[in-house]
Amino acid sequence: MKCINKIIPVLFVLLVLTGCKGKKFDIPYDIDTTTSAYSFDTSNVSMTADSFASGLCVVSSDITDGTEVDMSQATAAGLFNVSGCNTMYAKNVHKQLYPASLTKVMTALLALKYGKLDDILTASDQVLITESGAQLVGFKPGDTMTLEQALHGLLMYSGNDAGVVIAEHISGSVEAFADLMNQEALKLGATNTSFKNPHGLTDDKHYTTAYDLYLIFNEAMKYEKFKEIIHMQSYTSVYHDSEGNEKELDFSTTNQYLTGAVNTPENVTVIGGKTGTTNAAGSCLILLSKDTAGEPFISVVLQANDRDVLYVEMSELLQEIK
Image 1 (cartoon, rainbow, N blue to C red):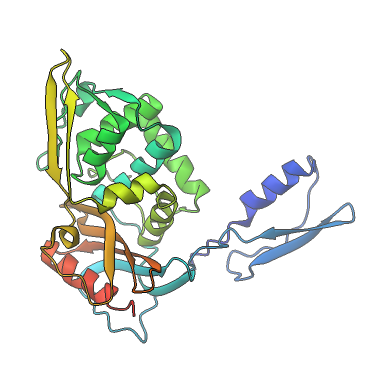
Image 2: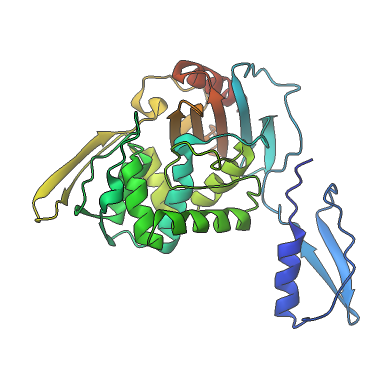
């Protein structure tokens, strides 16, 4: 069972805040428990630590009964009612898989958390990614752009070079940024995740799960700029090369629900999301959608056989939103 009631970090904070250093307490905690709060006694003072999962959807095993979802050709998938804290569908949501460019949700989250939209970024030689099939905005060494421009290239066009520029700006290097990604993932309870880069190009030690992606995406939704960018269909802007000459950014979203190439199921509105594709990861997609009452839902499909299958099975998942 993949229980996400992470009580230990919460207890540590409580102990520090109450000055209880150097003391040991027997905490009746079992990783398989479903209890939502734990009480213990320190110097005759009773304290309760709320579950780490408070306000989150929880799932420990597959949830498929009572649904009409086929999902026979994708390895993992999940549908989460954000406001209701309810997991509506789950298939292999704790299975570690390559996330491809869904990685960029974490990159964007950290950019918004630790950077400023008007920060000026300068591209290094590391933007010259030569891996076959790598999606690139086209940044060259010495190019300068704002963090906001880089975020559009990252989330809408899925530029791997945009991920590198952001990583180096926030942490100084791709390696240091990957360390930060993993630290922040643990804080969110994404304990089945290991990031090695900011873009999702294949690395044996770069993986996550459908559930961990839900946790990360759910956190990113706290930033209005994130929701704004993933909702946009197209974007045009101007940045500069190393000599100050203007260069144009002009691209459309890779999300086929937003472009109209794929129809959204009845009674559901797709706000936006992130696509991802590599040979190792297959076709992947995570979405923010809402029902007719405006209630938000996060859905994720990982390792579909191809793009057509991805959207067919994601649509089946969205049809569970009534």
